[in-house]
Length: 173
Length: 173
Image (cartoon, rainbow over all chains, first blue to last red; front, side, top):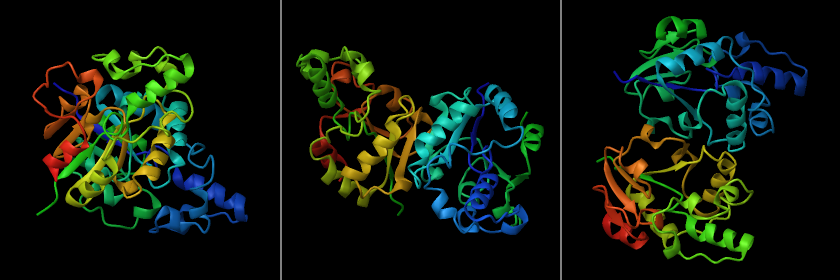
């Protein structure tokens, strides 16, 4: 039987965007935000210097990896036809940085399985793991909502929630 | 009625890859190739230094634009939900260069309508214009084969051939 096609988002699923924003905000201002401080607000808007940081060199390339993501992704690449689908076009400086980030942390994901796009509605697959409703709500397959501060207070819009990579492993492996 | 989704390839359709390879080969070796010399051979393989040039800075960014492509693309963006779908992942240095190339020559194509990928089979649409059978043969919608030296001697594999942008305009506008 053909493997199911699994689409995995990068920012907020594989990459810990909030850890990065908090670290860069602290470095810029000395203010230490916690995840509890930014519940319900879009990531870039949640931090005073967020809009500046996404244009700064090395912001995307130096993103911390989500806990357990590497080992579980490695297993998922065997069980599924796995594609990385990431919105990279709004911040074009992120394009080479995201590519190198994948090479560094997920070198087992072949370049054929990488998609950098603007609007994910053009990508087809059986399963999507993402942290943004704008991507999940238009997807026709099975959807998993990765809990992040910006979506933590929302209803689930009918998507199945996962809080971390161990929960993804439980459900998908 | 919803607009049909039209996917347009960059290299060999919007961008004149052969003109670029011939110019760079001439600059490197003094040998002037003609399109007739490289019929039936994959673009990168057709030129002795092709594999070197695709890794060189500015190769992708300085590609000549296909004749009439800009004006006809501008009209197509009104008539269709148009997405650029380009295989950029094999040569990651091409990622920012292709983005800037679009900004320079096709600034009217919003970043939301740009997809840089490895394997195009993951992209869904109604119509695809491409010069490579590997992309057209797996596409479920209507397909147009843009004639280029590498496919000029092949059968059409059931795709409708177009030789230039004026023919695209005739068929799609």
